[in-house]
Image 1 (cartoon, rainbow, N blue to C red):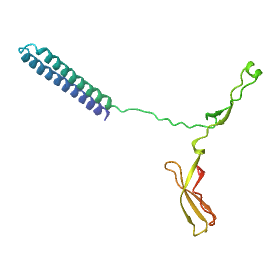
Image 2 (cartoon, rainbow, N blue to C red; image 1 turned 30 degrees about the vertical axis):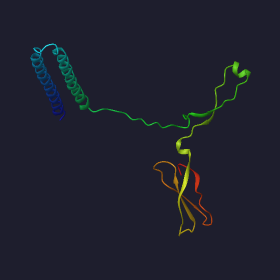
Image 3 (cartoon, rainbow, N blue to C red; image 1 turned 90 degrees about the vertical axis):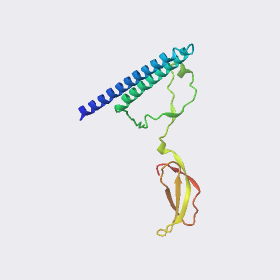
Image 4 (cartoon, helix red, strand yellow; image 1 turned 135 degrees about the vertical axis):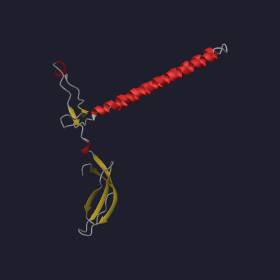
Length: 177
């Protein structure tokens, strides 16, 4: 199977190269005839010859670019994905201790700065939950408040309370509730 695939790829590359070569030879012969006919005209021939040479160069470079693009796209590309998973020890510091050091500490070797607050992972942040609807549960008789959590693709949160109380319109809820 692999030998057939290599033969097909090599054959198609050879065919493309051969057809571009024939096209370039055909264009070159056409341009030479065109230039040979126009040389008899006079002084405007040099401008036309330069334009035809520019056209020939442009068409040749487009053909070579197409061959290179086909060659590069014929093999599969490899890539790697990495997912970073942090830990409590590796968390960066969001608030450093900014107390000024006294005389002996500065001369005898400065103490290392201390981290006052480590960064929290996003699952521990508090989100805002907004009231979506409320109803009284017929089985328990308690008021059920259904809140929509802030964020994308998160499920609703339900809170039960006494039927005499009203549901808060918003409250601060944890994102992992």
